[in-house]
Image 1 (spheres, rainbow, N blue to C red):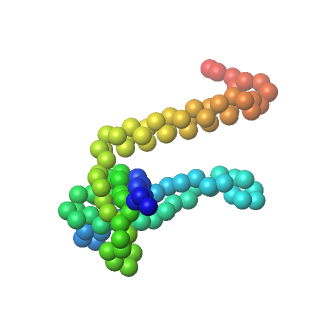
Image 2 (tube, rainbow, N blue to C red):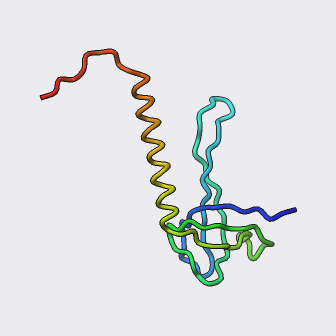
Image 3 (cartoon, helix red, strand yellow):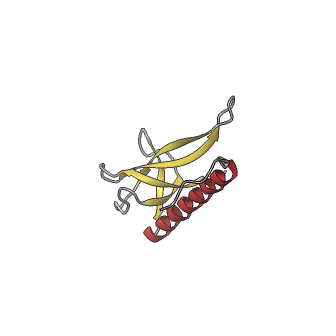
Length: 114
């Protein structure tokens, strides 16, 4: 069976050689259908203390190293790439909100401009 790979964000770098990485995901509620934000928390072995708080990292599954650590750090993704990804996601979100506002339309008179 191939090893699982994941990309997440470092949320804690307090311990030496250990990082707490969160992997965000979206889940549909089984009964109501609302999209919910959930996260998976992984504890990652970082041998050379390369990653720091807020870094986007690529991790790979490995045999257990301690009670919680079951992942190894592959690499720290370039900072510019993660910032670009966040900017693109924010732009898409704003565009979706603008589209929803246009389609809902209040139908009332426009606000006066001075």
